[in-house]
Image (cartoon, one colour):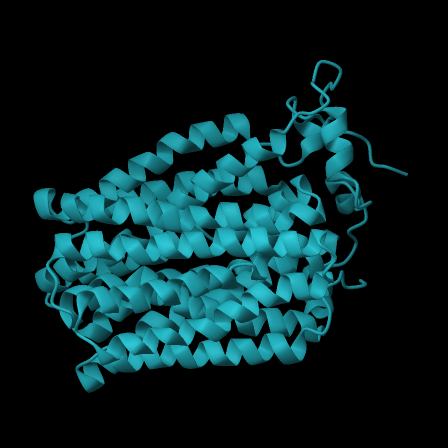
Length: 441
């Protein structure tokens, strides 16, 4: 028996909607935008860091602590964050989180000590916890399986487009108005968009007045339960749900590869601007504009991977290889980042960095594989554990690279570190993920 309909889950009247509505793409625009803002508020610190390091007289290890502090609590709370998404829905979880992290970002404007900066980075990680479990849940709710690769690619592209556009602008802000202005600007943008989010986004297409009966039938063509039916069928505790996930070798393959993926990503989100300024001796503005090219390359990579994965699936390739091939390709190509150690030519450095970040964009299709492997009723929890594994990499990479810099006087060993993890991720995908299909649970 289906559960009683509550006001928050009540189906909207569809009689006035056109049969060919495409409301799911409107949701995708919202996901793209909120993800872009989410990553701006994570990575504005990377642009400000060279100036903060000079102002506070920090060592590379202390700078690494600032960069990794975000991921300490972010990683630790991914499982409860995913469970929160399952319980209150992605709209509320993501919307309230956005208000919290935007206020936290604005507070950096007033930070004048190392301890306060660390505390605010921890607070930022706390509020951003529900982000990717909510993204994953919304894509699972709103898109049929055959479109999830592209949907995942397009919202993930928001990470890179926002950074490619904003990093040069934030660099100019830092030079003209000082590093605190970066945080004020990005925090205000987040607060403004939160109003749009609450007005436009719905947890499921059944709740949206913009979805036609025809579009709803298309979304539900795979025969998966609706979100209301998923909630009604959920009887296990969080511990029982975790047991289901960690017993699966497929999930472990996803976890290891995503740890590697995020280690590469967090080099670019944290140390990359400093690498250009300190290792390759660019000024802040030049580093900002040259540094936008790898972000654009990553955006192209994730879109190509998502489009290609769904195209392979529609062309008759098995779901297993349509999802595995892009991720394994990215993990295999990312170690080209080490070649940047061998040249001081700015165009060549940017070329190798762009190639590595392009490859990292391919790795982001791991979220699409997760959408096809995890039990539907555990999707939020699965997204939480997946993101937890990822952000262990995000927590360790900035700190490990900072220690390497202090020990060796160079960032070259840091590039070797993330390249080696990419190889490990490739092996995990090849050996542990036998099939990309829904787990029985």
